[in-house]
Amino acid sequence: MPWIEQSSYRPPLLFSNGHLQTLYPYFFRKIKDLEYKRVRLDTHCGDFLDVDLSLVGSDELLIISH
Image 1 (cartoon, one colour):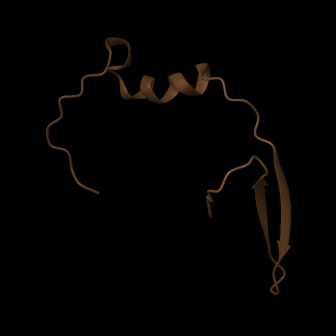
Image 2 (cartoon, one colour; image 1 turned 120 degrees about the horizontal axis):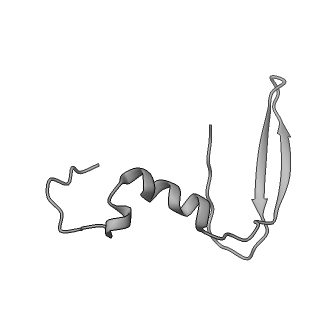
Image 3 (spheres, one colour; image 1 turned 90 degrees about the vertical axis):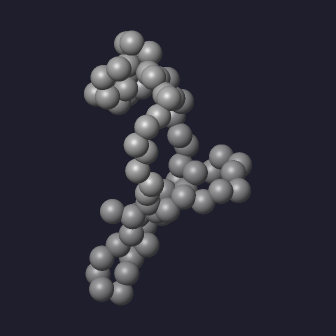
């Protein structure tokens, strides 16, 4: 990832603190519930993978592994 040494961006005074920039959307942004279907895939070693499928007409795929 490139390092940005100088930027002309100046946040609004209320959001000059990085912590506020992170917390504000968490508390005040409204997001409608995501409808999904959970499928559990059992592996041969006795473990499992839970896969959440969003059934909202989209052609894109996002894989998050933790």
